Image 1: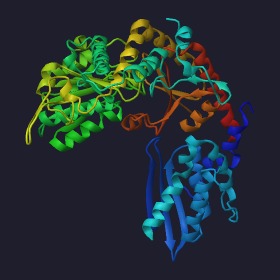
Image 2 (image 1 turned 90 degrees about the horizontal axis):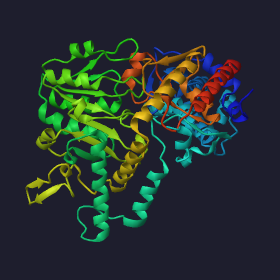
Image 3 (image 1 turned 120 degrees about the vertical axis):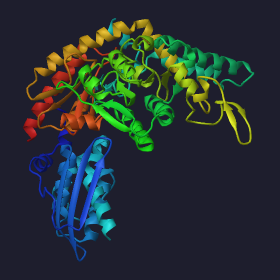
Image 4 (image 1 turned 30 degrees about the horizontal axis):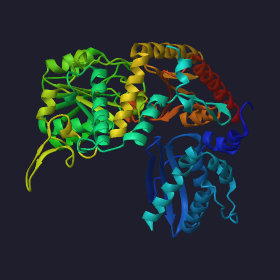
Length: 145
Length: 406
């Protein structure tokens, strides 16, 4: 590859896979959490729908427009939070936020594909792309509680 | 004009970004500053910083002379009749808001129309949306031609005798289209409307003559034309400005203050409430001297060459879409198939090349183009053909890079 290594740390294979083949893309019809969020400075947008029952996220889907980082992050997030309790999902959002800010983060939780987004923290201009879907989830779950 | 020599006067350009020599292609967002402007600001702060129009002391007089001297430079720069027609503002946005809030609110009624175009920047859309809501006037859009230009037929069709304000950008920050302001102003005037011009993307790059254009208001920003941020200009015809009420009230702009009533200073000061943007105006004056020394015609010709060169080289890249007409100002907005513009901009940044990615504060235009975002390379007097060669090479690499990671 003709580019320097930092780019490869950002554009990991698993990120591009989620971008090209997004998981849980769409809009839930039986949702009880429905949240739209934009990044007004760059135009990215995410529409997140969740089905929450007895404090558990039964189903999650997202729609949206944006760059590889924002869309892959949304895809990975929906994958990760499905089947988790609201509390666990919010904890995951905190861990993700720490990871994006380059802070030490709780590594007792298996992050799966999300781990691949760690490189984003080295690209300050792109952190907002990665956190868009997570902010939507936090806002949605808080308003639902 | 020798861009390589001009470049020496911009110290910021002489640096490496991510290990590569910087290629700055984001001047439509903000231009870089030459030494004469940096030195004028430094000299003001080091030697004669003082408030204006009030100090009896020597520094106050010096600062006032420099501030009002800058106003005269602006007057000459756009060929206004009088310095009374030159109001210093925070930038184009504030200038357009002043016209909307003062002239607009006072002169618009239900049934009146405000006419703008699909290519406007948000700063020439939202002030009119707000004044339309407040007055019951209707906001109308002039449609664009297929290549993104404006035809006078479309203007004729949209502007009617009910139209009171026509507000159009002279150069598009996305399409690079150069709009026929003089002819649009004639159509506006024929219908009894005033003509407002957003010159944010034209004033830095081409000679403007407000008397020849016969526009009623014209707005531009200092920071896009080698000046500092936080300074801009609102030009208005004196007869109109005289009728208008100030938008901001307070110090500096008053003639007499009573307990319940006050009166205003004469033009232009009645529109400059509060301590004015003294350093900014002085910096803008220095920028105007600098641009005029090189010559706006030379700058325009240089940028025209760069834009045509960029169009030729970039359109040869397969999978690259370019937006806007062929005849254009010095910028090229584009997308690479299957690569989001943010990703393009990140990859270019790793190559030391600064471009803009996003909606460029023109969401209605993005909708018209049917894209959510685009990337934009914009040129100024310090850019060279080598800069464009670097861009083209990096774009080819970007394509290659993403074809590998997918």
